[in-house]
Length: 235
Image (tube, rainbow, N blue to C red; front, side, top):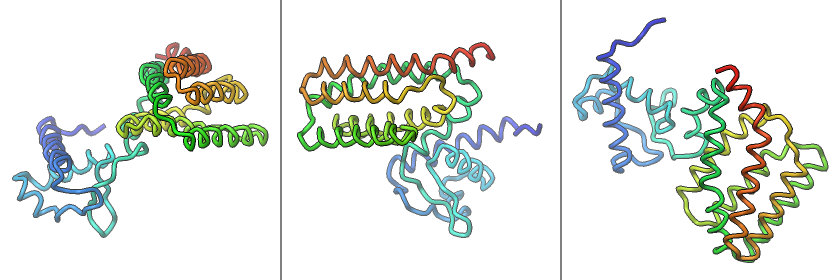
């Protein structure tokens, strides 16, 4: 194994932090190409080696994208990009799935409560349409992963907080990657729980929606238990 010298690691980290600060401040907008390496290194008063290492770090985190022959571009934040730093951690240590599920349990019941306060008749119809597609997928023995993610994303959208939407989409993207390893997946139960959620949101009762989501989260945690326990045994 070839380790990177400590000093170079610190310089790369500093370069990444400074470059990320420029992106967050709006000096480089989403979709914009960064200046040439030589120019940017001079502007930031760092070496080109440190700049390259810093760019590489921000690529891993999903903030930048190197396009062969075209330069380096600022990426639009998305759930897919945000999952990248966590994928390896969860796949190597499935027991951390318990922490991911606990976090969802802390957040999503309140998201459902907010959705119950805000949902319009059109949005309720969209949720019911999600249920119909889930029933159709179940009848054709198709996994519900995509429809499940769309259903929960729509609830977050109805709740009206874009940051919450992005965070929850990130968590669910990770869940979908691990879903094939989860023992005891029961589409009939999932749809039944989703239907209870729609009824609660349609009733405009925050407490009913909160309780329905909490029950759903407990069920998800139960189905993931074998994978979590397996990870703990191997830890």
